[in-house]
Amino acid sequence: MSKELTHDEIVEIENTRPHVVILGAGATIATVPNGDKNGIPCSVMHGFIQNIGLESILQNVKLDTQSENIEDIYTELYERGEECKEVRLQLEDAIFSYFSKLQLPDEITIYDKLVLALTRKDIIATFNWEPLLIQAYNRASRITKNLPKLTFLHGNVAAGYCEQCNHFGALQRGKCDNCGTPYHKSPLLYPVKHKDYNSNSFIKQEWINVSCYLCRAKMVTIFGYSAPKSDVEATQLLKEAFEKYLPAQRFNHIDIIERPGFNHNELSNTWQEFIHDSNCTYKIHDSFYGSYLAKFPRRTVECLYKRKMMGWWGESDIKLKEHESWREVETNLLPLFYEEELGKKFLEVNPTTYTI
Ligand SMILES: [Zn+2]
Image (cartoon, rainbow, N blue to C red; front, side, top):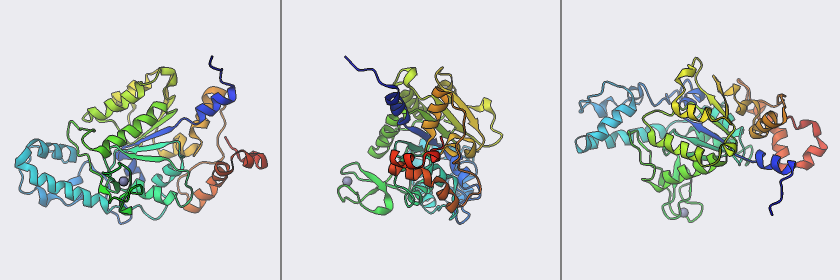
């Protein structure tokens, strides 16, 4: 006969459930609104072709689409097949090298704070190709090793993968940590109407990663990703992961971070479906700083549980704020790092530092 769980055991299980963060292009724009370290624009959508100086590649093709959206342009080149294949491959190369050059500014950014706001039980899944999140991860790893997993749902210019054993890591490391085989560049999943997420073992594994975490997640944050109607397969995969468990076991809260002035009626049907699950609450924020990630860094799930199940309405003393320096953020988070390293021993000596 199975033994009933004690209150402490239930709390332990709930508090170790993952926080899943899903990033779209809007998150990168919020991170580097004025371009990268060298002022290079990082936006991929409207006006992208001008931004990356690709008029010359497209000058020999007469496009039917009037759109300046890379998704529409790429889709047309793809659908016209052999006729446009060479131009399409040139465009792919140019996109890859353009994104490879992007660098985070020296000062702390939202991506740095996002990575530092989570711990190893959590995951950040991004649809973005640019290398900024990996750079943020590398900077955060100088402060703590207790960091979230990263997964790249459309591939990433800074990610490498091993064809021998399927391990992956930063492309700049050169070879696989596991077997020493040189890394392959991650493929980029280009914007066509019907994407095949199984076409490449790297991309397939990235989707398995996010699905595993999503099934067990307590909390999900969607940052600058609108689940476009054109990406049917992505929304289907997210829904499948959500529906795998009974409603009572699904995630309890969605934080949505969108640009200021975002109209709540614009919320995509995909998120509406999650939100209408009776077990799930949601909140739309117009900035990263209003979300659980900034208000309860590294303790988001514990705090959510305390609020939902234990009637707690307190605030954390430790928050991530705008206009803070690296030193300030590091100093503020220090008690949490100690607590993670030393566990209960630290709390016995410093009972007041456990702020949530
Ligand atoms: Zn390997």
